[in-house]
Image 1 (cartoon, helix red, strand yellow):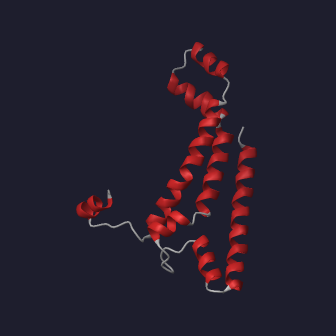
Image 2 (cartoon, helix red, strand yellow; image 1 turned 135 degrees about the horizontal axis):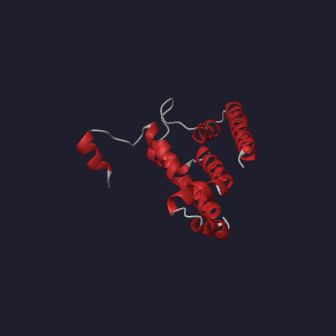
Image 3 (cartoon, rainbow, N blue to C red; image 1 turned 90 degrees about the vertical axis):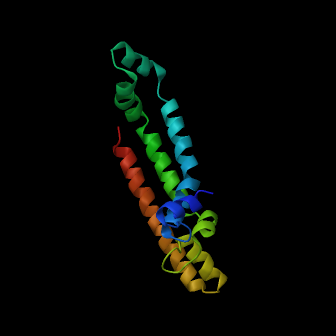
Length: 149
């Protein structure tokens, strides 16, 4: 729908590029980030917000000095969940980016391709690597969330 106008104005086509894979993964994972961020912000004690207002702080300063620091752990959790969801995205990336080896092939698509062609050794190696990468990111996120006060 918007692609023809983008191509007409710029000559740029997003379909079957790595940009399409990133965009598809982002769009699919975005609801997790929004949901957890919203829950984290809504969980901030309203009394603390009211106290900030009574001390003369406006909405903008209250958001950055009270709400954001108190909801930071929930936002980090949302970012980790979103990242994990985006890493494992298969359907949307296959539809908009395809499976062009060396150009748009993502790890889940590479696993599927290897398994469907009977190359189980390669598929298992990719799964092990993918698991290690995911575990590393979860470990780093866990360390970062413990440092946040």
